[in-house]
Length: 427
Ligand SMILES: Cc1ncc(COP(=O)(O)O)c(C=O)c1O
Image (tube, rainbow, N blue to C red; front, top):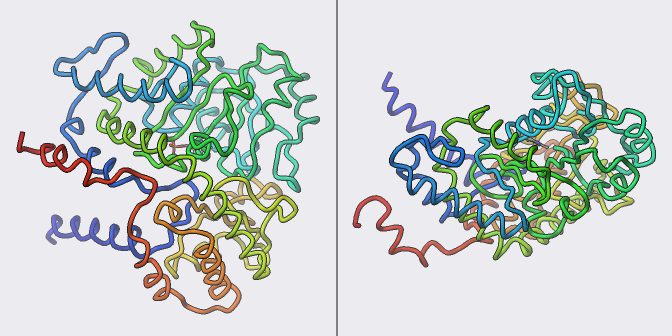
């Protein structure tokens, strides 16, 4: 077996299939821009940096500079100097925040797993690893939002040190302000923006820090279309002791080399989002509504028709009548349509990894490939043909994708050709 060829084949196959032949509708994925992709592969990929105030390595002057510059872009966007971009993922960002504020044995309040809470905020994930006990906040599954009155009562009874908002299944903004106004101001409010960070950056979802959150944790690669990684953003007036603990939990706590090669791509994405983020976020939300409406018109049980289905990048369908999320997601994948099976609020924790009630669709990536409302209507028709009429549409999907091969909402690579020619030689 020639493993070299096999590995190269795998990469070619992946690129061909997922990048050019599929409708990628996974709500936690995206595609980075051509310019960000160009600078992702650089000498930084092979280097180390570990630092608090000073680097503990030699040869890091540019590694320190790129981190400084990217943090500066984030600082200017969020109006705070409390930015941490070293966490390698959103889950790790959550771990760092929990560890900095809570002690083993503490309880905190977070979204229930089957109401879209991320596993890192439950006993099965980071919270369990840190010996924390989560108490789920109350959720209204008709409205697909937090039940504010019951949750305020819960918080005022439990008096936790920390409440976590934000979820993996998220159609509508979280009621941060409503809850903040009714609880002890000393309770720290954290917002896990992993899914909606791009919509927040574009100013089209909610503004957690302005509404009363103390800290945002996030991934940098879902609706925010950057390289895979994590970040933490805190209010500028957060207790210095907490921020210092957070930095020390990051390093030397849990992140050593922080994979510096992410930073040029992260910076480019942030600048692209400054320029195109509003337009992108608007189109994402409009596309999600159009897809939801199209699916609803074909008889699918799309959640929240009374609220125009969604205010985010996500669309949720209850597919219990079609044999459940696992079956439906598999059938769609056979037709090159990639979605996620997902638990809905009435499911049990066990259903989440079994055959849950729902599928979750995210339109952010296909929006970046240039699709708009009319394409969403066509995608709804493809779902109908596959799931209601049992037709095979794989070839149609491949053909359809041929019209969408250019990534939008980003800088043109040609503008920077002279720099790109110098990246690997030609100095
Ligand atoms: C709400 C939420 N938080 C955190 C994470 C973890 O992010 P990462 O995959 O970057 O660790 C996810 C992942 O999907 C998520 O949905």
